[in-house]
Amino acid sequence: MDETVAEFIRRTILRIPMNEMMSILKAWDFFFLSENQLQTINFQQRKKRLVQDLVLLCEEKCASVNYAALLDIIYTQVHQHQKVWDVFQMSKEPDEDVELFDMEQFKRSFKKILQRALKNVTVSFRDAEENAVWIRIAWGTQCTKPNQHKPTYVLHYHQTPYAFTSSPLKSLMPLLGQALTVANKYHQIVKMDLRSQHLDSLKAIVFKQYDQTFENHNSTTPLQERCLGLDVNMDSRIIHENRVEKERVQRITQESFGDYPQPQLEFAQYKFEMKFKSDLNGGILAERKESLWCLIKFSSPHLLEALKSLAPAGIADAPLSPLFTCIPARE
Image (cartoon, rainbow, N blue to C red; front, side, top):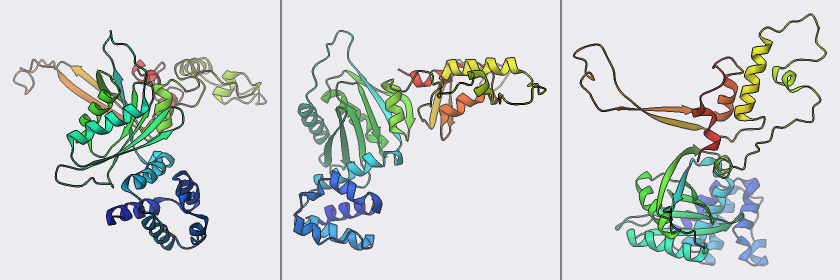
């Protein structure tokens, strides 16, 4: 086994928490080793020594770089929240027909496109549940070997125009987009304005899987009292100020966001085009005729829940701008 592959496997195993070691190794199909070989491994020993034993066994089996990449894909599937994911949407021409998806043909085409563009590139696949495939790409150049420690990950669902990607190398995204488009027999691909560490939330938004039915929480307490935090047994002499307004705000908020947990996003950004107007003469922008572009970014550990709480907290007026309330329904 090549020293580069051994180091790749060693680094990957070191990242795996001890309480997940056995389950991830099983998913990796690590148990292609014989029972006698497995009995030589002490999974109770210190991690550094355990990693050495596992790498030695992989060397005996002459594990390839693709086999090592498969372990990295499995680790990323389990710890997908450690990455930041973007969403890409492909589309066909209006008069184009949708063709049946052939997974093996897609894999061959995708890999061939990247290998033609770059002499040194490692492409690995792992089929997943729900008609999806995970793709791992280690990029090299015409003169350098693929860097296995800065790969790009792609999650693509069959028969859908969506691909979820996480990549530290933004300069190679056009090539990745071309490979996805051609291999899927689409016409073009665009990056959606969705980005998050929570891959499941992104999938819930683009596939419209989040629960849009209002929950009753099995409570007999009227909704307005639950939302306002009122106690049915409270002193009747206590009067709540602005009760009608609070009920209105809560009703509008519920109509906009629903009464269910929101998909978890951390980022949102908006681009605005505007004209500069000024009564002052001689200003720097006074003679400018072109429009100005303004980029506004929002971030929060749970952006949609934060937006949902603005009006009830009195920080913003209800209803919120559709620019915010339409985020879960982005097309």
